[in-house]
Every structure is written in C-alpha cells, then in structure tokens.
Image (tube, rainbow, N blue to C red; front, side):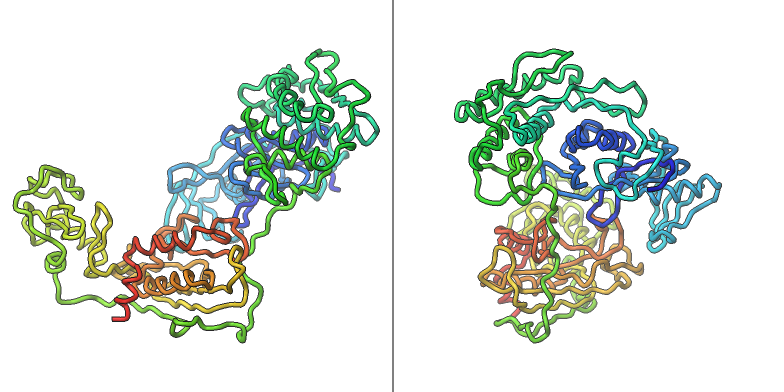
Amino acid sequence: MLLASAVVVWEWLNEHGRWRPYSPAVSHHIEAVARAGPRAGGSVVLGQADSRLAPYIIDLQSMHQFRQDTGTIRPVRRSYYDPSSAPGKGVVWEWENDSGSWTPYDMDVGITIQRAYEKQHPWVDLSAIGFCYVIDFATMGQINRQTQRKRRVRRRLDMVYPLVSGTLPKSQSWPASPGMAAAPPVPACACPQCLLVMSVKATVSAAGSGTATLQPRKAPPAPPTTPKAPTAAPGAKAPDSMAVVRGSLKPLAAQGGRRQAASTPTLSSASSTASPPAVGSSKASRPGLSTLNRSHLQRLAIAQSRVLIASGVPTVPVKNLTGSSPVNPALAGITGILMSAAGLPVCLTRPPKLVLHPPPVSKSEIQSIPGISHTCRKTTKKQAKKGKTPEEVLKKYLQKVRHPPDEDCTICMERLSAPSGYKGPQPAVKPDLVGKLVKCGHVFHLHCLVAMYNNGNKDGSLQCPTCKTIYGVKTGTQPPGKMEYHIIPHALPGHSDCKTIRIIYNIPPGVQGPEHPNPGKSFTARGFPRHCYLPDSEKGRKVLKLLLVAWDRRLIFSIGTSSTTGESDTVIWNEIHHKTEFGSNLTGHGYPDINYLDNVLAELAAQGITEESLAQEKD
C-alpha cells in the first residue's frame, strides 16, 4: 500500500497492445461503481455515462470490457497518475485522424506532451517513450520522423479525472480496498438488467440460508450534487426504481410463471419509498433456487432472457457458453449472467485466446504440395512494356461508335454527343471520338479512356470503369519480395480432416518505383514475414494455385496508406483477403469460416484471375 493522492484513469487494452484511456466522465462513472463495492453489482454500463458507448459493459470482477453487439472482450485496468499531471488538470491532447475527427493520445504520451508544453519547450520528441513523432508547439502539429507526414494536434480542457487519497493499492483488483478514501454512496442502478441480476444473486444468497424470498437492500440516500457525480442514462427515472421493475419485468412473471409457477420468483406490485417491497413470494412453501435442478434453472434463465430481449434490454455475450441450447447469440449473454449467479458452470471472466501460429514444426515435418512445383517464388521489379502506344493498346478492346447514344460518359460526366470534358494532359486523340468496349458494351469518349490508361499501370490491360470487366492481363504494383508455401502437419479449426497449407510472404522495405504513388520515396514494410493459412483440401489447393498467379502478376500487395495504423507509403494488402490466424477467429482473419474459400475465389476473379488464368500461365 502507498499513502498518497492520485487521479484515477480507467483504461482499456486495444488490439495493438496499447492502453487507451476512457474519458474523464466515463472514468468517474466506472470509479463510482467500483468504489461502491459488491453492493453495486460489479457491472458498469458505460452507456449511462456516454451514449456512444452504449454497447459496452465492464465486469469489475474479471476486469474485462464486453462489447454486446460483437462479443469482443478486452482487459481494463485502473491506473494512478500524479494530480499535477495532465489528467489531474483536465488537459487532453489529441491528434487529427484521416477522417477529420480527433483521437486522444495514450495517457503517458499526453502527460509527456503536457509536461513539455508547461516548460515552454518549442517541441517535444516522443522517441524516448517509443513513438517516432515530434510535436511542434509553434504549429500545433505532429511530424512523423520517418515519413515526414504531418498531422494537426490540439490541446483542450475537460473535466478532471477522479481524485483519490489515502492508501492506494498497487493492484487494480475489485472491490476497492477498504483502506481507500470513502466515496459518497451511489444509487442502485434502476435498469431492468441490473435489477434482475441483483435479484437472482440475492435469491442464491437467501437460498443458502434456507430462505425462499428475496429481501433487497434499501436504496442508499442520493449523493450530494458535485461535478464528479456520475450521470444517469438519458431518460432514466432514478427516484422510483421499482417503477422500472414493474414496467419491464411484469411480463416475466406472466411468461415464465405459466410453465414453472412453483419455482419462479415473482415481483410484488406494492411500492413504498420508506420500505421497498420484497421481491418474491412470501409463502414459505415456495422453494429457493438451491432446490431447483439444472434444467429448471436453465429454463428460468432462458425465460428471463427472452423477456429482457423483447423489452430492449442490452445483453452481454458469453464467449464460451458450452453445450447445446435454444439460446441464440443475442440471448446468450444475459443467460450466462443468470446461470453464473445461480452457480452453474458458465464463465464470464475468461476471455478467448488469440492463436496466431501453429505449434512448432520441424523441417522434417514440412512437405511440398503435390501438383505444385517448387516451394518458393520471387518477384522482381516491373518489366516495362515497350512498342505500343496507349491508342494501340485500346484499339484491341474498342469499337468506334459513329452515332453516340444520348447519355453521359461515366468518366468525364459530359454527354457522349459532346466533346470530352477531361482537362488534364491531352492525349493524341480527338476529344469528340466515342468508342464501345467489345465485351461489356459500355460506351466512353476515346479521349477519356486514353487518359485513364495513362494514369494507371500502363501494363497493356484495361478495366471498364463502369462494370470492372477486365481486358487483357491485369497486373499490379506489388514491390519485390518472396512467397513460400508448404504443408504443415496440423489441422485448422473447421478442417480437421486435412493438414494445413502455410504461406509465408516476405517483402523488405525499399524505394518506390515509377508505378508507385510517390516515385523515389522510401516505403516501409510492417509485419513481415506474414504467415497465412489454407486447408490442404482440393479447394484449398485450387486457391493456392490462383494466389500464385496473383503473386506473379503483383496483385497480392500494393503501396498505400494502412487502414489499421494510418501510416502512408507502406506495404498493404490489395483486396485479396488472407487468413492470418491459425487456431482462432477473434479478428475475423481466422478459422472456422465456411465461406472463406468461396469468398477469396470471388475476390481473385474480380482481379481477373480464374481457372482460365492457370491455362494462360502454362501457355
């Protein structure tokens, strides 16, 4: 224990392993529930503090955040910072992302920036804390030291994070240590979900002492009005909590009671502010939950879940709810809470494990793939095509149109009967000539098509801008690299009947060529070597063969801006999805995925790579 004063910042762990701070208002709300201890129920509904966080609930017992609509589970923690630092003064530093909105820095980064700002330094270099950025206070800009890309930053004032004093625990366990400074009592949450969970937990406790009825605690007095007090959810009626119970849970007794009137606790309709009504029947003959068998308890949980879903109450998904059950994913969450409260073996506190790679494989276990020669392919720099002008290339794919239809050219948006509206470098083609693509029949100004070809890869192919039909052999701008492929003796989830094809891509950083976005400028290659997986089945081998064609045509990767990190001039995937998780599917890039092979075949076809391409490659 440490005797000190500090500000408390609640943080969550993102997919990149970085702790991201909740806002001051949300941290106040979480802290208030945490300080209230087990009597507050142990769950924090973040939407009560910020409506944008409505899908999220924090389980304080396991210190995990649950997203109800996707089932994502992330760790959370309770961190302490100096009251004189940025969070203790309500200062928030933010950077402008690609969408034009503002993103707060990690807390330690914001504190470092604020410290330099207060000392009136002209700039601060963040490389000392692991980031290759410089913050220039004169221009209020962030500069990437490697790429020289600049972004705007800003400093704004928010409410101060919650302050605690006394004995500070080193751990972030819950409930809070009793030695910590006392906080004002927090009103019980009046939402139907919290009331139902609390009632079931109370039933279990009462059943252990031989009592069949539930006697909920009296609501504590409302805390004094302070700027730090957590705000109630919009539209919530805190003073009359039992009114919410009557309005949302009354159908519960009617629906669940028809099948199990002798075992389902009911709610009294009487209400009094001085003495809250007892929940449950007063008859001594009514049994407690401890007298119910497993199937009765599960039916009770399912019936209550259905009532809550019907009334719009949010749910918490249970990632490892085992066994067969009629509960669909939307109902699994609240069912899991109720079954857990009733002592059934449902685990809400164990997050699923990310399995990116297979178990270790020795060289002797690696096998080549039957029907595919070699186990490695390399690509070199693009070979320039010579001898044909853009006009000569397009002539193969077009028919001249003497009488243009009365419609717009979808490239320049001018009427086809009028000259082309293209204003860039002028091709050596008359602006009023019109041509029709022979396969798809779409009509354009020849002037526009030549300009489009000149702005593309100039590889002798053309793609219709309207329907994406490909003429010729489409190639890409993938930088030089190596592709390895072989069989390993492990099965993928959902493909237990076969081994696994492992693909390893390796592309080094380098300098962009004339076909890239910024010729002559260096590019980065993050995350290489990249490991990808296919089932060693007939369809899996077919996909591999087509991926080899895509690799040879330089279509797997390109150079651009990463949608994950926002970094520009870096190697990125090029619209052909790969599975990079071996033993799980937490990110959506793993197995099982019954539609993946069909989906990737469709993506390859969109790039002009089909079984016909295999024959073309042999020719």
